[in-house]
Image 1 (spheres, rainbow, N blue to C red):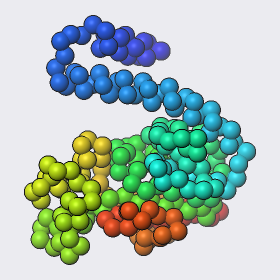
Image 2: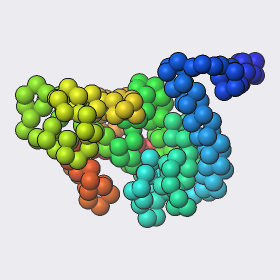
Image 3: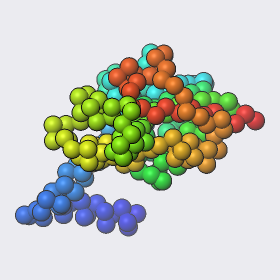
Image 4: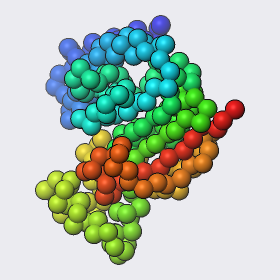
Amino acid sequence: MIKDLKLFLTALTVLFWERPMTEGYRRAVKNLLTERELLQRNAKGQARLRSLQGGRSLKLNLGCGPNIKKEWINIDMQGGREVYEFDLREPLPLPDGSCSMIYSEHFFEHIEYPQPAEDLLRDYARLLQPGGILSIGVPDGEIGLRAYTGDDAQNFFAVSKEHWHPQWANTRMEQINYLFRQDGEHRFIYDEETLLSVIERVGFVEARRRLFDPQIDSASRAWGTLYVEARLKKL
């Protein structure tokens, strides 16, 4: 309680009395205001998710953005009526073993590693029923690093520049930095070895790289995405 009160008083000082601000201070205030808005929206989303308490064999689409899946529980902090708003940096307020599949595409790279990434994966294991499937797609860091060292068999720099990277990312190093940082939005970029390792470390089995699946994956992500799949061990 005392710690929370100190944080609250500090927040008031930041918002109303500290002038003038440095660039770093201004960025911190902006982040604080953003987090405050997310906190308010998250409270509403929690209540809505708790309405699913009796559900079984749910299929979760985490960090869905505009890629809505019918008959799935689509969760993000942005979206309309079909999306459950929730801060996915936090454990989901759903019962143990209530899900048959948990899916995310270009979301998990926005989570800090190794924590809270490992804790979130453990929470996914809690949510899945025995034999349930975890499927994750993230930017493939290995492609970019291979391209930088001269093995650009997949034309990484040309394709990335054409479809995703901003105008300022012209040199190879500028493009690599954008892949790993994306204007501060990316927290950790994976290769196959690392992603499979952390998934297995939290208790999943049969972790493997998989091919792009047009039935569930976004066509715009077919190139440059590392897709992996694993199962929760059966009892």
